[in-house]
Picture 1: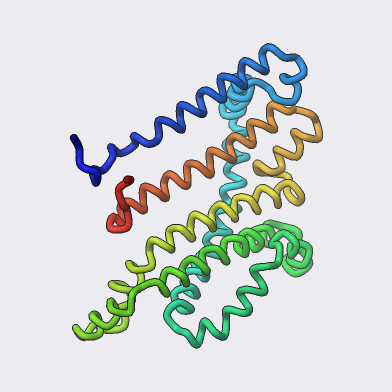
Picture 2: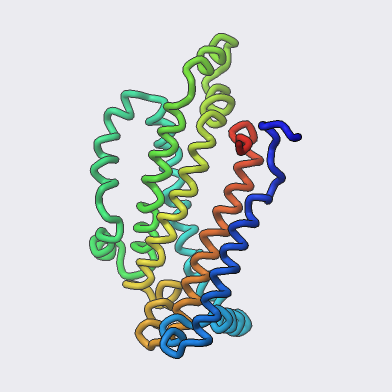
Length: 261
């Protein structure tokens, strides 16, 4: 009889999810194959998979995903680095937090895509305003999570570090960053998801390339299977990034992982 604190085998918890997905896809396939009306609006997964294979072989899928990832990566870098630095500062300094937090609360409430027209006037009609909107979408989740992570570090850790004569840079790298890293990783996940949503929305309304533009074109021309294929790729991007982040979290903050009960 195993103990109550025994850690489950890695990956064991993924099988129920795969089983549910397989069952749902099987039911969807059967329904689309047996119903003419369903196949028009809900093409079979095999048809969608065939579209993905065709687009991959032609190179169109790589170009489309590359355009989306380019905007997404640029926005994450532009918004993520300042968010990380400001979040660490606001979490550590009550004075900075008191001065900046009202501005953060006010700006965070504004729908990011609503500022696109203003940014297009200021930055032109190219990629710059789109990347700036994606950066704004990524900025706030990471900022808030980072600030929360720093504030949840026990003061005892700082007292011990100062008691041993640790310098300010050493306290930063040995106490502040490791102590807030679990929350920072959660913020990165939230920032990625928010940035991906905004990127797709921007491409629908203001781009000729990317997954969002493909989704909109497929809707306009009633190529429903291509619409679903683009949505599936978008989902794969989200699942893939979150899986990579979960793997990185287990390596970077192993002390934060707790066994399932």
